[in-house]
Image (cartoon, rainbow, N blue to C red):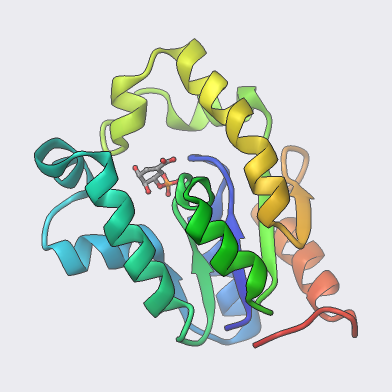
Length: 172
Ligand code: S3P
């Protein structure tokens, strides 16, 4: 696998992941999509019927399987919040890239989104508090911290591919 993208909801993991995969001429996988396929129901329904801990269990299993494959993987915003996932990510030689975005950027992108259970559930200040709590977890799991606010997806992909091309960056 060439790269794994992490970051809060709305940080651009799916958009950048698809573009990065195109650029690297490889496959793109989205962890949320893989979970939805495996569970046969949308994320909102998994949360509503079984709760977040059940979702996190599915997410962990799916992450392990996905990391055996090729290409670029876009994770979910909560993936590095599970200690076991951070362990898997940091112990793997696959480069992990944190797409860092400001509070304003995230709010602009996720406000009103009905497909994300945590956005539905949390008030704005709670969502931002969650983002701030998670930032140190993203930092701990990341090999590259990529600030994205001032960049288009194409520029972000360019910066990532430049970094990946450095000889000291491992691939698996
Ligand atoms: C979550 C983020 C979502 C999805 C689920 C939980 C989170 O993924 O995995 O709704 O805890 O931040 P995106 O970051 O792709 O929205």
